[in-house]
Length: 220
Image (tube, rainbow, N blue to C red):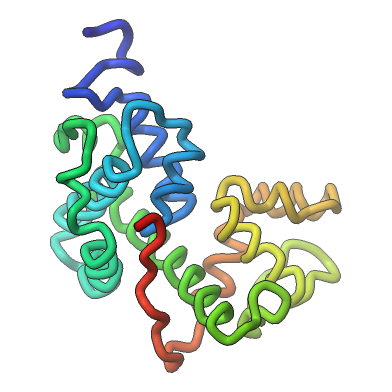
């Protein structure tokens, strides 16, 4: 069945669904498959289809970077396998990986940045899980003090916390809409990109001496 290039059925995954899933995978990250499924407004693919899609997407990105980012992404893949290892048995659809790669712009140039984004989102998830385990979520979550540009004058660590929590809850695309009341500050953040002012600036200097959180099993 072919109606248009944006709605070609590949097996039973449409191009439109694949592109939406890839987009929101990059907004929420690993093991956030229920959120991705909801945000992408998927009907035919179920949550297990989304989990398999995301795993295959990252596996292909790693192949394109010749394994140079393997250490960066390996813990995420292991976490995925623990929580979603049996997803293929529960899938409703067949995924054409070659078509996914072609239609979702999975190329060597974009693969490395995509992997780094997923790693940053995982750092954010882990930081929030640790805060939850210590009874500090959401009010006592304390982002690390870091240097670098800030979105606007008067920006504080409290604003960092609010933005990070919003990004975790609503994704990179939706999070800022729930935080910024100051129009000029919002314009600046939009211009520079949310990652530039929250994920990259804050999480790039996260201390790595904290014990890792218990692997998430969301949706299981």
